[in-house]
Length: 402
Image 1 (cartoon, one colour):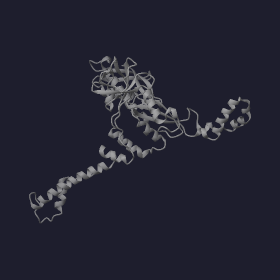
Image 2 (cartoon, one colour):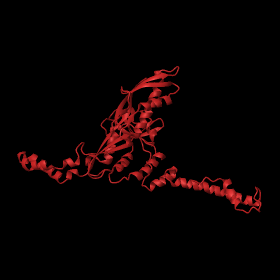
Image 3 (cartoon, helix red, strand yellow):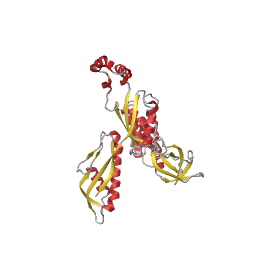
């Protein structure tokens, strides 16, 4: 970068003038060169800005978006939260009706599709602000016969417009993994772009533990087929013949089964509504494997959520004067929750998450230094050792005892 000052520029300019001329401040030569030096310094400043904006790792949001366009990437827009609304009486017509809680307005979209009752209600304001309110709603216009209207849970979290640094990471990731035709990067990009999804893992499976190669008839199977088929009922013979010929012609190994595991955009366990949305977007149940979703033809996609793994923690704490467990418990729980959220955010790029005793102790001592002076004998789920979670698990705070 060009960090050149006005004085440096002026000195260089004056040095090029013959010393027989008066170059002191206030002289004609000095006064004529000084404004030019100022303008040149401004040009250097603009040049530095231009250089910074030209590279993905230093560009401001405005210019980063332009760089991203070269890679076919655009910032993910803010999305609207979808919540479960419960109304009484149950048979009242509320679809299309608008309601209010606090500063937020909501509209009823449809009956909930997860079989748990109620309606899908959308916050009219996009972003995470739509995730804030639960409880009693007030109809914006009078609804005859309505007794109660309640938001009970978030079905699909609302998201803010994609953060600049997240967009920057996605820009650089596009050079490492090219997404195309249903490869791993393609599935991750498409799934993460679905509203409400925070992280995605893609696993290549074939109907569980069955590999494509094992579905090709080997010599023993072919020998049995030639000699043993005739002893079976006609209907069974017909079915086995169809399956056998398909396997022999390698038709059963075309495409494959893909397992998609997701976290929601709050980096928490996804509920059935979000799982169904992802499934229908990638590979609709009605047309499984036929390419009517984002998944390529021949790809059968299964969608599941991460497994929450309860983590119980026991701490042997030494307190500062005037403090006890009842007083510090909520602070300690907040520290653990923040740590577990960090782990959940790292789940997508980790083979296994590890809950570490050293992290728990150091974070508590750092954040609660006025209340706690020492920690010893920390146990996770009854053991004084780190906890390695399953590949598709995230930690969830259980009981904490101090």
